[in-house]
Image (cartoon, rainbow, N blue to C red; front, side, top):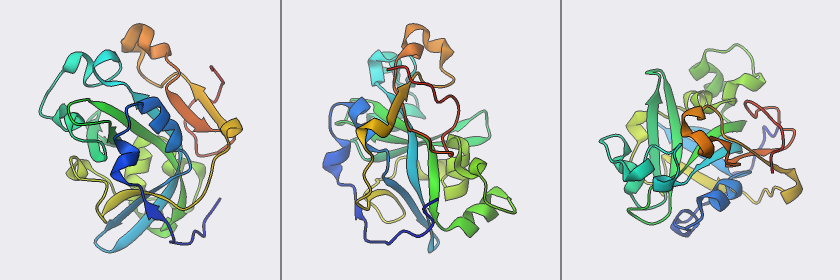
Length: 212
């Protein structure tokens, strides 16, 4: 585990998020740092698992068919906006809105590897010691990093919640794509290889089989 990371990172720019290919962005987010600084408390994790959601044409997306609700309206914002929703009334799931305004693409961050603020993460998750479950799965990511629905709609260019590049690179050979998890309702779109993981990383959730 990469517990010691120098804070010489660069926050991702708006240009990273407003590209038109959400699948490419989901891949490119692997290896980046998801950073939070709430009430002066810094935590960060390296992104090791993502899922792409291709907006109005994707049956697995909350915005399929250009559906707009109070919850999903944020998906129509300009890329680089945070979309956090509550799942099963318990889990806060953090998503990155991408593309230009009115095109509701998003990437779900499914797992990170803790790198900064481990003691804080342990306290937030009520764990006595660090294990692989602390940030495995999107609900655990948000719990460990202190992200809740209060952060939905905020810009990822701010200093409270953002994604950064610290120069860490992921080789293409280390990236595996699979079908997404928990979207059986999406019929044929449930089979799309829109989930991306870093091969062999122990914090990755769910299946690790290669589909494409």
